[in-house]
Image (cartoon, rainbow, N blue to C red; front, side, top):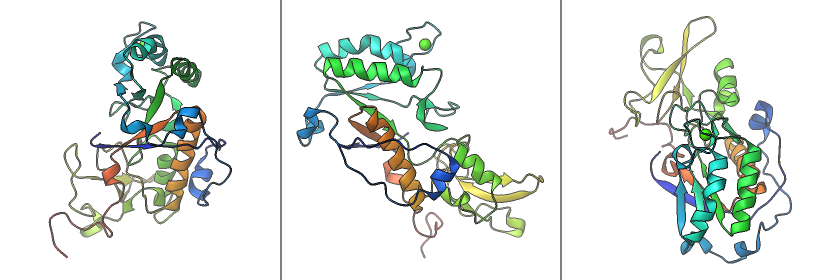
Length: 266
Ligand SMILES: [Ca+2]
């Protein structure tokens, strides 16, 4: 994770169930009446003067004693933050994840990883936060997901040029047999920002872009279906009562058109 942007929203729309088909086909903007979540959100810009306390779930409080912090532990300690006059709590990622990058590799944006608890635990935590007058902000990780995400697994199984692959950034390689990466971009974690796929027949195929770990494929934010999918994710958490989002890697969602070589003109 690097720099962050916070966004705050007033909407509380209905849920939409997830499938690969809805991810790929949900290109139409979601519509419907918007409802305020709670009264204090009527004050514009409440976050401008708010004290926001970041909670790293893994280490904050381990209530069940298994060695890893959990959502129930956060619930247990929220009163301490309220007594400090904290206005809002920002939760670092707690979503379902293989944990290759401390939860910033999300395989399901609308579920709690079992190491932290359940969605039921989250709802209990929200209820306690509301009782204490604390707002909750959750992390949004829109630049990339986990390679285990159902949409990326579908992309790997789909052919070049398919709608499934267009949710991500797949390109043919350069050089003989495409064995060189599509460009010279480097990963923040070291090495090329591209990994070559291997087909079911064992033959090398296209490459996919990952600005971070190879297990974190970048989404294609030029595709309206990606916008629609993240609108669904925002709505899911707003519906559970959160007051806003901290946006991870917001600066890198949009890639230079044509994916030009880094450091070279033209
Ligand atoms: Ca625990």
